[in-house]
Image (tube, rainbow, N blue to C red; front, top):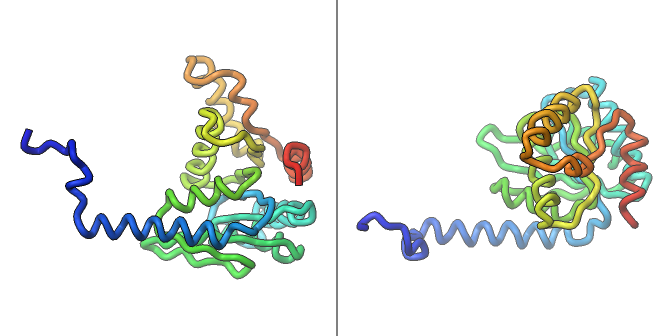
Length: 218
């Protein structure tokens, strides 16, 4: 088989070898930067929401409550609901972390970061979100938000990480997806009914924070 890729290590080019070192360096830098951030909650949501819009202001209030409860707030460090998440924590005197990703259409970091970490690889960034968070809150968002949510659910379901609270904030936004989970995934046998207990769906920021506090020991 002349085109066999059986011995993949022999096929690594010099460029690919250097990429491995870059990945390792990014992981080490992330570990060193984030090692002392304390108990944290990762907050995800759309970059396209503008200041003054309802979800922006709700997210500022949510992250303020998290900071007052003793949690560091981690976001993707960009605009929209990421900015709102950092802003609420920052202005409340809490620790505000941004995991900034370099994109072809450059994502600009927001101005409410007490700690910033830069990444080129999404999978390394996702590792940092999951490693340093004691809970996840998913706000309305796009594919990136769904990606982070799905990653956490899979890792908890397969027991690759210890279960932690996951909150979907916004019943109108998330309700259709949760209904589809029940009507398709559960009903067709693709997951168990108990998997629906892996997350809480609510419209209340107070309930979200209280739910996390009940399950996380500071």
